[in-house]
Image (cartoon, rainbow, N blue to C red):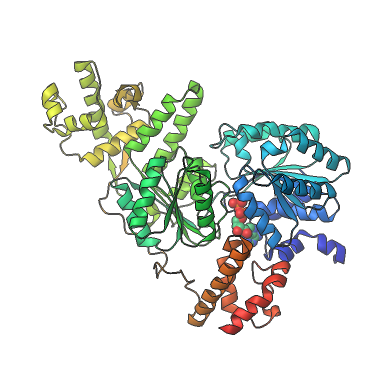
Length: 623
Ligand code: ADP
Ligand code: ZN
């Protein structure tokens, strides 16, 4: 039976096309949206860039059109609400946010619109939502049947197992207790089983339907390299493959962020620092510039990035190893949201492992909790040391089976493997002997010096040249031994005692390795980076042009970009909120002469066609 006009307008397919200008739903979006429009509770697990926003925005529109009222979106990042709401307004959806950046008067205006039923979506931070004043307003809407849906974004913040616990999220149980009949959906890109169970319990979503998407991000290429001279390696990576691209470089400490940002600037790369120690204004300004300009590299601690929905971030680099795979995956997921090729590049070394271990050991948490953290760190180390497909490993971590991807460093050039079992035994036995003799242990450098038979001052001073393992490992390079040590630390056969100058200690698990019962397989260290596939040609510091366009189309593309920059500035919004690069490229390709020609280009909804159609045609006519 054909839909009547009213049904058509209500249909989610229609909203997708008319408002957002997209032709098809992506992955499980359609079933999530159908379920939510019908009033079901949901837990949505989808990777970053998977398209979570539409999963609540379309139900919000559909339910508002049915007279069910407003959707409340709870999001932890007030700094980004402005752009999210801006994007909705551009698409012609009535939306607003309530947060501390608004003046008292502005907030009052929003509250009035809320109570009048004048909004389809309202974004607010959890601490705002749970204030008595706001709850009273929700009560009033609820009594009138005008509270349509709660969307709890970044839902992993409710769990201390997630990597970004926010205590304010705990108080959100009030939504369920007070408004049991209002459907709720929790969305996150992070969810190992532990975190998932925690979200369900904490937010009382045990009966919600769970939508678990594939976590694969096929357009992201993964590379993990061993640290030598990290900043030089980073520089080579950026200048070799990403000049002129927007990217994020994650560093462990604030100091390092500053250093690296300066270094990149010295090399002519437009880089900005971001960390919690910077003045609030500076931080905000740097973030704005990253979002609004093209080709900026943000050098940051993990304080940066949650909720950053800039679609054209072409690379995410980790200069230091993150804490765990969840964090790594979430951070790398900020690359390539637009589906175009992007890189995740990480550099890791023994010191990273030692530092992370120390942070865990020194934290005041309970032992069982620390044990969990150590396990997570080991899993990431395992990924770093892996000699098989990175993606297969990553997905397996999230419980997903897959085949070698052909788009990671190990797939491009399978690394040689060497058997480190013998080296591992010799290392352990050196640690054992020194400990036996001196009653104390030593750090990694000294232990491997003994094994390699180096006559350092320290060795001669302490008489360690007479140990039976002295020089037994002369054939191993320092690099190799460091690799072996990382593995031993990873499997728990060696611990690093942070209380005693990072000395190496044996554990119960050492015995099996000493006896040769555990095989230690290692990546062959390569002194030059493996030849990487040239993924995109024509890298230059100038504006990147879509390779598929012919010359006249490229000129149209550049003209459109210049026009878009003007509009974005006028509206105080990032350029991608006006149109994505891919939309501009499609327009340039089509060379439209009439509004009709613009119809059906992905990313041009009805409101945007109306607002910008004529302007675009004028830009085209001038070319
Ligand atoms: P997430 O919140 O899951 O990280 P977003 O909701 O920000 O992802 O979506 C990522 C990008 O994909 C956005 O730029 C969005 O406009 C785009 N997108 C989402 N769904 C679709 C779709 N069905 N068709 C085309 N583009 C989409
Ligand atoms: Zn692979």
